[in-house]
Length: 105
Image (cartoon, one colour):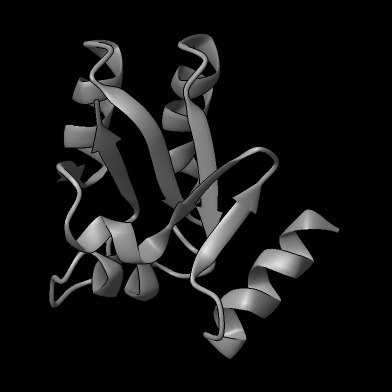
């Protein structure tokens, strides 16, 4: 149910905040937040405990993002699902899609 709500919010683009319980972080904050972009860079940041939240595109290849999802669970880092790689890339103000983005502490 939560994924349907997230998808609808992103689809309508009325609200660009993704609700994950008490903690909410807007995709708009990715424009100004200190962040790393891309699976490899996000994985390194998670391993070094530099992240407070990780955004992962739902349309990214599962074999690529699953190890990152598992790593986030091990390190108890919040994960936020975003509908598409292109939306995530656009939120980061880059011209290509992004499979993952981490907001740094």
